Each structure stands twice: as C-alpha cells, then as structure tokens.
Amino acid sequence: MKRFHSGIEHTLGICLILSLVMATLAKAPVNAQSTTMHAINPDTGNNQFVFDTSTTSIGYKFWANITLTDFTDVYTWQIKLLYDPILINATQARYPSDHIFAGLTTSPVAPVINRDQGFVLYGNTLVGADTGVSGTSARLFQVEFQIIGAPSPGETLSCELTFFSGVGGTFLLNSLGDDISFTTENGYYAFSMVLLKPWLEIVPNTSTILSRSEFTVGVYIRELSEAWRLIAVQLKLSYNTTLLEFVNATEGPFLPDFAAHGTYPIITAEHNYVLLGDMILPNATGYWEASEFPNGEGLLFTVAFKPLHFAPATGEFTVESLNGMFFMDIDDEVIPNEEPVSGTYQTNYEVLIHQIDYPPYTFYIETISDKLVSSIVFNQTGSNLNFDVTQYHSWEGFVNVTIPKDLMWLANASTDEWLVLVNDTQAVPIVYENSTHITLEITLNFTDIAGVYILSTGVVPEYSLPALMTVFLIFSLAAIVMSKRRYQRNTFKHQLQ
Image 1: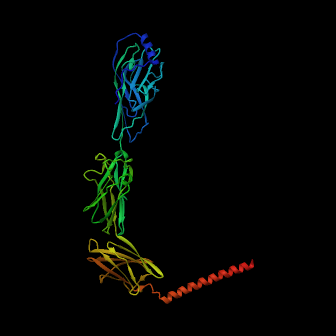
Image 2: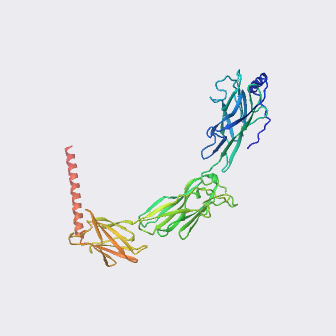
C-alpha cells in the first residue's frame, strides 16, 4: 500500500461554511457516545472491497457507502477519505436520497476529488435547526471508485480507504459547535490476479470399438493462460491391456507452435500405461525467449491403440500425473491444475460386411463374432462359403453369419438342413430367417485357428461364358435399335419442317 502524506492542507468552500457555523455556536461538553464512521461495501454489508480477475476486470466501478452509526446531535460533518491512486480512482461522490440530513435544510457543497493525491473531501451542515440529528445508522455520502491497477499473476494489490483526521480532514460537530468524538472502520480494497487452472482431457471422451482397426485418442490441454509461462507437460496414460494393445503415440502441434527452438517429446510404453512428456527447448544459453508462451488449448499427443477383445467390455484411459506434476513453468515450479478428464472405451462384438462379387451380381454377407474373422470365399461349384476364425482369449466363442437368400438357400426347406463344419467337425447352428436373409448362429470351440465351411442345397446359378455373351449381345442390339429409331424420328421431324 502506498504511504500517504498526512499534512495536506486544502481550502474549500465547505471549510468556510463550517468555520462560520462554529464561530456562531456556543461551546458545550464533547459528546461521549461511541460513534463510529464506516466505509461499507453495499454489496456485502461489510468493509471489504475484494475482487479478482475471474469475475472483475480493469475499469470495473464500485460504490462505497460512508456510514455513521450510534450518533447523537450531528449538525455538521466533513470527511476526507484517502485511497491509493495507483490502484483505484474516485470518479464521483454524492449524497444518497436517504442521507443523514435528508428532508432538512442544509448548505450542501460540491465534493472535491483529487485523483493525483488520492483523496475525496466532502461535507454538509444543517442550517437554522435547533438540534442535530441522532440515530443508530445513516449514510453521509457515497463515493464511486474505478479499478485502474492491474496485478501480476498470483499477485494481490491492496490498499485501505482511510478516514484522515488531521488538519483539514475528517470531523463531526454537534449543534453547539463542539467536536463529536468517533472511531473509524476503514475500508479494505484488494484486487487479485486469479488464473484459470489448466487441465487435460482425452478426446473423444467415449470410444466404441466395433472392428479390428486401430483407433486413436487425443490428449488435449484446456484453458491454459499464457501468464503461467508453461514450458513442459508430462503425464501417464493408463489403459486395460486385456482389452487394448498400445501401438504408438505422436506429438501433437500444440507445444511446437510456441517453440522457436523446437521441442523434446518423450514417449515410453510401460506394462499398462504410456509415459508422455513434452518440453519446449530453450535457446543456446538456456533461456526461454518465447515471444508468446503457450496459451489456449490444443492437441498435445495422439495415441493409437489396437483392440484385443471382441466382446462387451468397458475400460478407461486414466490420466495420471508424474511425481505429482502435470505442468511446469520456466522456474521449474509446478503449475496448479484442475482434475483431468479421462476417457472411456467400449469393446463389442466385431461386425464385418463381406462383399462377394459373382458377376453379374454382388452380394453382402454380415458376420458378428467375438473372434477374428477372415475374408469370406464363395464357392459356387461346391455350394459353400468358407472362412477362418482366430481365437483371442478363450477357446469358446461364436460367429453369426447372415446370408442373402438369393445367394444361398435350402432347395427343400422342409427336408434340407444347413451343414456347418468347424475344423471338419459338424456344428449345429441356430437358424433365423426373414424374407430376404438367413442368419446362422454358430458356436465355436477351438484352440488357435479354425476353418469354417457353410454348405447349402441351393446357390445362385452359374453363368456360362456363352450365356453372358448372349446377354451382352441382346443389350447391344437393343441399344443399336433404340439409337436408330431416335435418328429416324429426328430425320422425319426435320423433313416436316
């Protein structure tokens, strides 16, 4: 807080009025009542004027009520309120509608606001009244302040709103012109720089795995303020090794975008977690000369995984700190952080769509399984489909195969049956069907890789080469005929014209 000079002398119109009043009033004993003068925050009802940057910005204005409590026979008052002009400025002062002399005859004056020295001088006096005003609480005036001083990160700027009682300062007089003794409760002003804490998030927050393809998640940083002067990030990303296999991780663009001399990423795979770290490199002298420190939000790492499990299960990417630290500043100090947002993932049975090209037709077969299903081969001559399945974590499992009825069917639905062989051993499927498709639920029990054959008594007919050529010639002749007819119509229309 700035040290104020108490020997300031100021000549005002209010001082002349008060001098005249005092000269004409007789002297009497001083009022012994415990009268108190307060600087009160109207929003809180106390003497605290405390703000921070999370809700308040430079230029914000606030009011202070200068209030008197437990008073008797107040006839004249003058207040000199000091403040730090580097931190706040008084912008205006006024009598409120319910001020202590409201409804009585007074001799009001204009307030004096000195923004260079940091004080407000204001007063009022009754005129023609026999006695002063008594009461338990009343406002003398209101003063408006504006915040002008900006704190540094983590800093709090503060000062007091002080009642100055020296020469030309604060006093109370009764109707006899005697001083009224009083105590003061100064106001306390504070403005702090509160920075939002950064945090980490896994994106997407939820991943659903339905195929054997690799998939990626991103590690993002959120709500980073440049004032933190961040230079390094480190974390541990844990996952369920029964469900997933770590493939690789790559550095995201966030830190490199702020690194004039490059970055130093670290990616280390452990048993069930990945260590991820990245640091902005200093210059050759070891000094971080960034024109702009990292701020905002962005992608720190992209991490790729491979699913190992094709059955309903749920796991979590857990974000943990290393040695209690996620973020570090240029002074090797830990930057506080909000709790990270982990990501969840769900495995399920693998769903594959197999395309069977059998000119001139194309068919689509769907498989759902907790095993690894290979591509499907259609053998028209042998009236079968065949594919391989590979087990993951248990011998037992299943594969459901949905087949279009115009590809394979039972020639005699009442007597024929589907034949399913798993490693040359017959398996009895559960059969479901609708108007267009047949679904076979096949139970599996094998140790490594199994060959699955599905045979039917009816398959799409084979098209011979002569038959295909005949179809081609028919379509070609039809195209020629149509073209010739269009030509004849156009010629006839031209002749008519």
